[in-house]
Image (cartoon, rainbow, N blue to C red; front, side):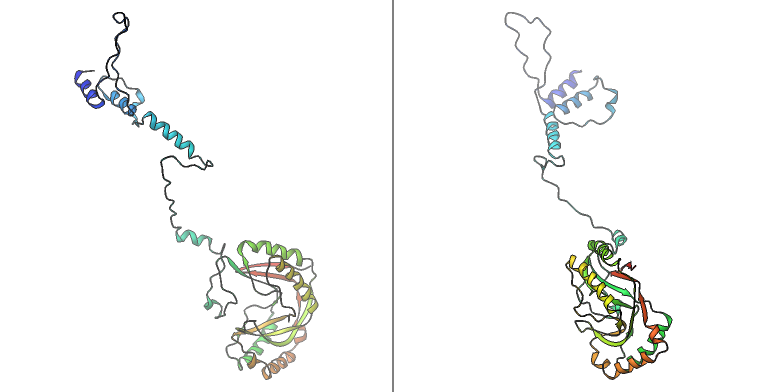
Length: 325
C-alpha cells in the first residue's frame, strides 16, 4: 500500500494503536507485530474501504454492492426478527409499529358481490310506494312463506271483470303481479340464516300431502299498520290443511326466534291492493257487488278450486320451493 493511501486510511479511521511492548528479557523472537486499527463499530465499512484501495485483492463476486452493517447492528436485526415472528406477541425492540392503512376498495370490485350479504335496495318507487312494516338494514332480508297460486287464463279473465268494478269505488286499486296464500308474516332474516331456515322448513313441510282447496269468497283485508288494503278471495275449503302447514312453519319461526303467524288466520288470495286504509269504501255495497260477479262468472266453482302442490319461501330476491308429497 502506498504511503499516500495509507495516510488516507489513517485520516479516516484514526491512527494505529501503540505497538505492544516487546517481551521482557531481550529482543522479540517473532516477527514484528502488525499495525492494528482501533476497534470500531463500523468494522463492515472498514472492510469495504480496504477492499477499495489499490492493490487489494477482490473476490470475483465483489461486483455486487456490499451492505455495510456493523457486527452489533447485525445482532440487533436478528434479535428483532426473532421477536417479530408471528405468534410471539412481541414487536421489534426500539421500533414503533407502522400505522395500518386500509386502501379503499374500488367500486367495480364492490359491485361484483352485490346481493351477497345485504338485502335489496329500499326504493319505494320500485314497489308502488308501499311503506315497509320494518326499516331496511344492511344484511337483513325480508322473508315470507306462502303457497303459490298459479293463475290461469280464465282466472285472469275473472279478475279483468272484478277489478274495474272495484276501481269505481277506489280508483287507486292495482292488480297484484303474482298470487299466493300466506303461511307466515313477513319476518327479518340475517343473510347467514337464510339457508339454515330454508332447510328447517323443508324438514318440516316436505312430508305433507298435496291437497285441494277452494277460494271463492270476496273479502277486504288490511295489514296490521293499516297502510295497505287488499281485495281477496277467502278460502272456503281446505282450511284445515292450511292450518297444518302453518303449524309447521310456526315451529320453524320459533326455532329462529321469529314472529309466528296470526292466531285465527283467514287464508286468502289477494287480487288487488292500494296504499292506505280503504276498507270503508270497499266493504258494504261494493263487496256485495263483487261477490255477485264472482258467483255468476262462468264455471267459477271449478275455476276457483286449486291444488296446493308446494310451499315457497321468498327471502329478499331469492326464492326457495319445497314440493309437497
